[in-house]
Length: 187
Image (cartoon, rainbow, N blue to C red):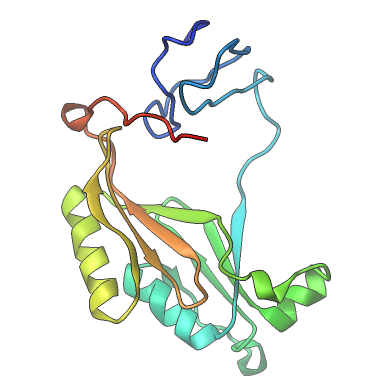
């Protein structure tokens, strides 16, 4: 378990220390990003991600282009409103139309589609980050971040889905590619 207490600690990022759980508190956490866990274990497990889409067909084409496995909807009347995908590690990705999402989330603000949440998909190699980014941008999707080697050792890129959601593609971290983090943002 990592112990730290002064402002001299390196900035922390979940991707930089994926197997580390930090407990306790920092007196001076202004030096970086803090991942703080106050409970020894969490009863929460990430079960699925629901993405609310403006145009189901267009959105499914984008996510299939990235390589997500998406099942065909057995009932034709539901095809414009719901689809289910699954990642290679079993994470469920559910796609819902605005109309259907408002049935289970009546407080949904449809003017807020494409929020500040970024969904990252892991790929096995650095080269796949580049290939998937190139495939998406060649198909006309906007790049928000060209492929780059990150300070924590992974290679990543970010593209925009048809509803403006940021979608990341990231390789595993390579210890030999790690470098010191950039200075923290000025607030």
